[in-house]
Length: 262
Figure 1: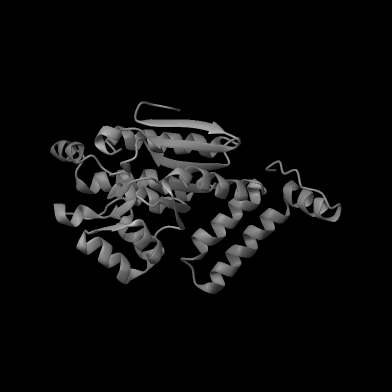
Figure 2: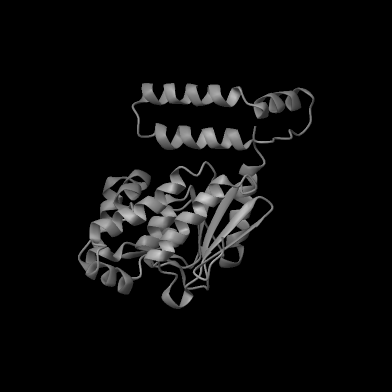
């Protein structure tokens, strides 16, 4: 699963994904996007991977998004702006359907597509040195890997408009104030904070985690009554699982449950 451009390792139920083009601020070429999509599909099918932590090599960038030189080269070929946008969107949509929590450990610049990757994750924890922005408007186009949509859903229309239309960079504290990130920690504590958050989640039933994520992710776009129906249907599926029986039994027996994901 590991490549030169994206490194992967798994330990204690957590998959660690490292964007590994530090000399290019961990930016993405087309084949890097393809590698990310393949990696996410493999993680989805791996029962030993219960959560993912994403970060960037070096201390300068989480990711600067699309490699501009590559993007321009692809435009000269068959892959135009719309196709490039849909290509990136397709890869990041896999995070929505992963069924496992993903955490962006933002250790430096998260701009353009890099910020869009972070927004597609379940959680975002930033180093105090992190900086965020959508510079695309200054280049004559827009954030095309879901940034305009996810930013508005996360922090509201007006604040998202400011980020997208001004193209300015903001620091970690401003990102936290906007609700763009869940927390800000010192650089040396970044991965540990992500591991702690992942650990608080993966101790629970994989089935329960998956249905909770689906209920929140899809329900937020539905009218309340439809969201409640979705919640009930997903709750019914979870209650019929062996994990639910084990959880209830363990509670009554005053012991820790042993979840199997079935």
